[in-house]
Every structure is written in C-alpha cells, then in structure tokens.
Image (cartoon, rainbow, N blue to C red):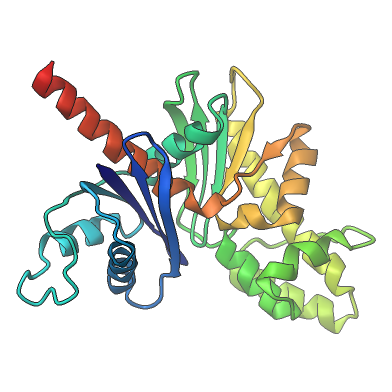
Length: 283
C-alpha cells in the first residue's frame, strides 16, 4: 500500500507518496495559484497518471481543512479523470507534519525553523521527535518568504538571487522597520539616497534573521542537542542559513528539498496511523 501527504501552503503545494517501507516513491510540487484546491487535485491526477495508487491522504498546511472537505465532496459522476475517491482523507497540523518529516532525515534534531510564504515557526522536539513547544508568527508578513519576495522585487532582484546578492555586500546596513509596508518605504528611501542594493538586501536579511533567532531562543531552553533543521522555501536562501548559523554559533542543516518536509511528514503519519489500525485489528 502507498500513502499520500499533501502540504497546501500559501505559495506552493507539495505532494509526497510513500510506500509501506516509508520510501518516497513520488513527489510533486505546484504553485498554489488563486484556486489551491484545483491545483491540489491536479497534483493527484498527475500521481495517478504515473500509475501510483494510495490508500489514504493526509493533508497539512493552511489549506488542509478546505482540501479535506473538498475531497469528501467530490462528485463521482463528474470525476472524468477517475481520481481515486476511495482513499481516506484527513488533516493534521503543520507543526506535527514538519516534526515527523524532519525526524525522517534528522532523527537527532532538537529544533526546527520553518519559514514559508506567509508564516514562520520555531518548533522544539524531545528525544523521540515529538513536539514539546512551538512559536509561530502568522499574523504579519514580517519575517516570512512574502516579506523577502516583496523586498527583492523592490530592489530589482529575483527571489532566487536575493540571498546570493546579499552575501556579496561589503557592509551591513540597518533596516529599522519590519512592517512590510514601512520597510518597503524605507528601502525606497535608501535607494534614492544612493545606498548599495546589496547592502540593503543584507540589512533586510539580518532583520528577518533576528526575528527567526528570537523565536528559536524562546523555545530552545534545556534542549537535549544543538541540532537545528531549517525547512520551508526560505531555507533555500543561502544568506538566511549563513546568518542564522553565525548568530546561534551552530550548524543549521537544510534538507535537500526543504519545501517537501511537511508533505513527507503528513504521508508518514498516514502510514503510521494505518499501521496502528492494522496492529489493533490483528493484535
């Protein structure tokens, strides 16, 4: 049997399918777009077009509840692409999904930093990979991928090059505001004054780093290890990884595909729930 996990985020959607042995047999990603449910279903159509079947789906991310409801109400008559409607679909929080996904690759991880498009999270784990406590910023774009994306555009950089260009700055420059609107105005003013774009970029990264480190420090008390794992889209930003590592004086590990961790964790939880049910049935 196979088990699917889907992470519906504000910027991207990821699907991961694992088999009974926890091996990843399929992983797909798409932009969330203006209709996340439609995009999510397209990913499952793509999974089934590869001949991959799945016993259940575990949804996570900000769109998890909408997807669970939408999947339960799919019309079999109009299901022209023959999406599997027999799979059980349920939902789980991003916190639990990321904790399980990280544990699959880094079983000794004690802290997770997840920065996505619209929120950021710091999660403390115990020795068994269970969530002890967490901090979350989901009320403001400050310190998120969206903030960096807007600032990159204001400075004329692509989001992919933003971190690389910031690392080339000769000096640090202080950005006083973390509010997206006020920060954009401050950046525009600095550009008008002739400030170096790379130094402005570095200053913006430092501001986000300080916010992330503050969250981590609030949940790291008496942790059993210093191992920090960085997930989410912003984990692909080289400058952010370097600044956080230097500030905390420890290595910050990044999975090969940090955006897939939530979907992977959801799929593994779906597998484990089924295993638990089977054990009870034949126990």
